[in-house]
Image (cartoon, rainbow, N blue to C red; front, side, top):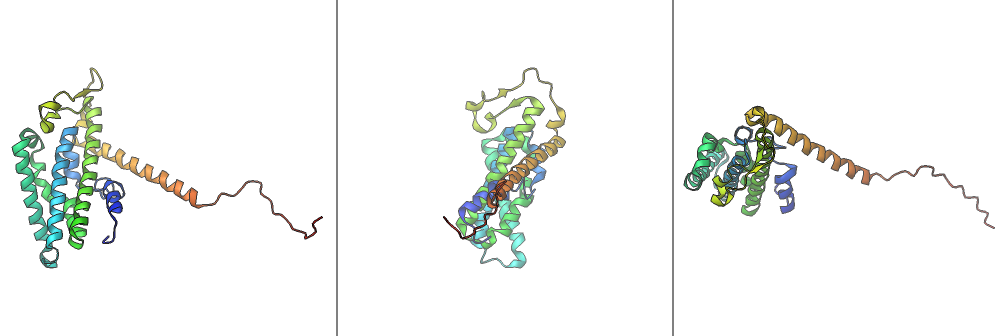
Length: 238
């Protein structure tokens, strides 16, 4: 892990080792708040900020903290950045902060953040640790947006509702009514629908990985020509 290139770190965060689709970490807030796209963006950005900040700080102090107290020290660092994210949301997106509620402080207990701090940032220099935190956070954010979009579309028949909670009055008209006179599907609005949506996303990723693996294996195996025959050489040429 210490010798990974920037390209490998980017692929890990976005796809190969995505915290939500592969590591299956941070599911509590992911399943609870992704009823709409704007909720997913809000929680995803807060998680991204905490991941980058905590990875940076843990990498800075990695040579000064003994192994016996490293986890309490990491939790204190993560809690500090979660407090910063919470105060920023109260200052700039207070209504969204109220909607997300307890799940913003609970970022402290997100296994994906503590896992990256212990498994990567505590063993690597600053820049790779920051890149790892950013890409892991971005991968988590994209899954939140995708799941929020699926649940909002199926559950309410709309997309991009209440985007002004993050982007201000300019986003008040971004709401798209995809289906007219749509009867809400309460199952997808509630957390059990999030399990189904996340299951489809994981199945889609596994299906794509399977197709890529099959094509790679097909390229590596030389095809055998149908109808090919052995040629016997007699040595008499006229």
